[in-house]
Image (cartoon, rainbow, N blue to C red; front, side, top):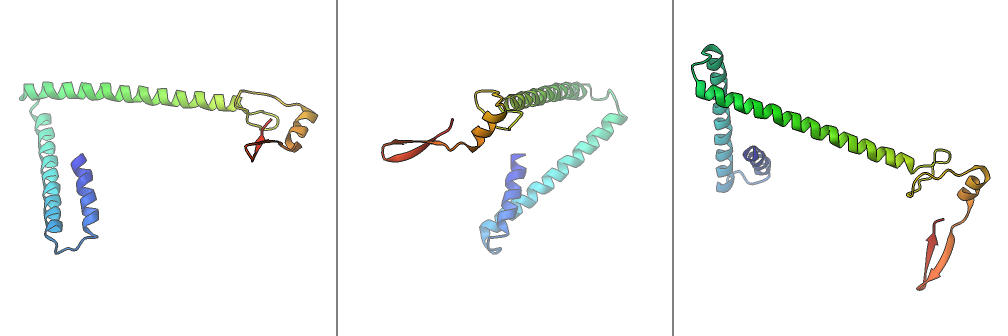
Length: 144
């Protein structure tokens, strides 16, 4: 798989390099060889699948190894699904926590949790100018 990524990257980069450069020719030849080897492996895999389907029980050792790998794949898929579900639950919990920090009446976001502002106080909150504190020669605004 890493070889595929590297081969694809080198194919892409070889387009920007001079085509008469020996290194570019070498990379191109290696990439072509890798592609052909992958095609060969895929053909062998197809042959193996067909022969296994036709001659069931003829290769008991390979069949048991295949069953073991298939069992491991199923366990790995179940683990992946569990991790995805856990991630989704965590994201939903974070979203609920975020929603609890927003006032449902005015939409103000408060990091400390829900704080509902009422009527006149809510309007005063919106239009009130921030207080200014002076220190070290700079002006800092304080949020209420």
